[in-house]
Picture 1 (cartoon, rainbow, N blue to C red):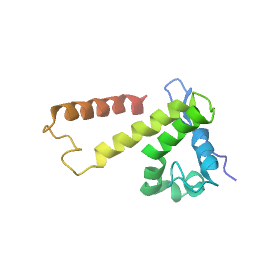
Picture 2: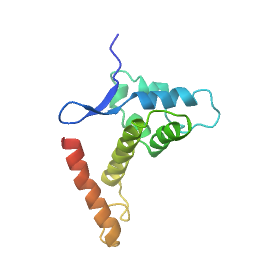
Picture 3: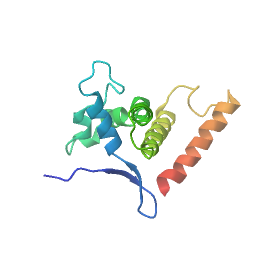
Picture 4: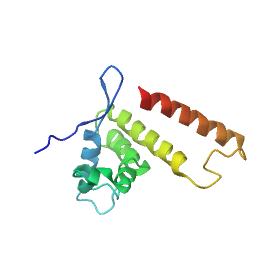
Length: 134
């Protein structure tokens, strides 16, 4: 059996930046609940096989605003470790990057109709280059 991945992302000096464990904790926490913090986060996504890992829909459900907020909820209300906020930040960061890169609507894309939104989007994309490169 293949070992389970626990580290999601590394810094350039090989120290783990984020962990997968907070997301696993969220899936376990909400498993028996009727109202879920991240309704599309399932064990199938977390334990995806060889081909399941390649599905864009699984990545969208994993790197989502709901999962990020769910991890934050566990830290704030369930007493989880504050270092899990780094994972929540990273999930939200990748979600915003994906939304910018895949949007077809002129309001979300790099449109200069609203200068403030344009500059914020460009700043996020520039920071994405730095974060994902290191």
